Length: 287
Image 1 (tube, rainbow, N blue to C red):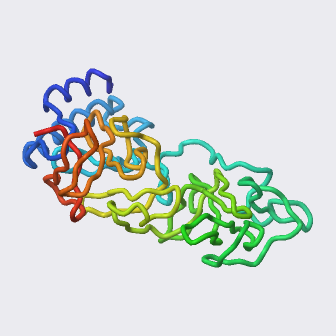
Image 2: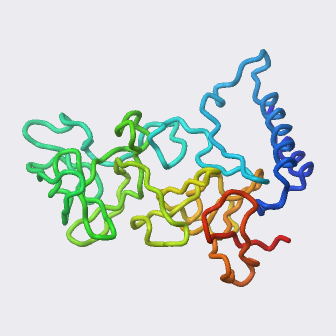
């Protein structure tokens, strides 16, 4: 059985350091191999199978000395918001993603961020400008962008097949209603977008630019709220501009520009010993 002792023992064994460049690649690989062997045995149901809680895909990426966590156990390929094991929690009296969600001639649209049955909807398709969700066609809403409101296809995170094969259901769910930003539990279908970790304007409002693989690929994701030093299980649990680093006790650390200083108490800006975005580093108090 997997217990806290399992993790504590591994933590002690590897002498874990929060900064990703603290180990050599070979040492990290050996330690992770041993730990994965422990996990495989611990998660077994006793007769060679795996338990129900292991039914997802372990979605982590090995970095040099750390595991980049980018979602943990994922169950929906189209989601950027992590695991959703229950019913989708999208609010409203109806579902704008379903054509027959309302009675009679009424249609479902997002009003103040929630699904409501209305008499009329607009004609705006994906990418067209808008000032409110009623400007957009059925199944669409007016999402907040840096250039203003833009119609996008509505989805509910956690709903299988909510978006196209090359799309994901994500984003912060910020809508525009007559110039005001309105938070919504509904999300937007869209293709993954790469970004610049040093440019705070390379993603849309409510998003952050995150390193999501060891290539190192970057992607705009709905930004979390974790500050420097906060515990994290996936990249976008940290707020924009931070990186979730660590193998066991993962923490949010600041992404910095090489040659520039770090805030007081966060050490110096150092380039990680791994594939990493150009001109960027991590603030570390390590050696």
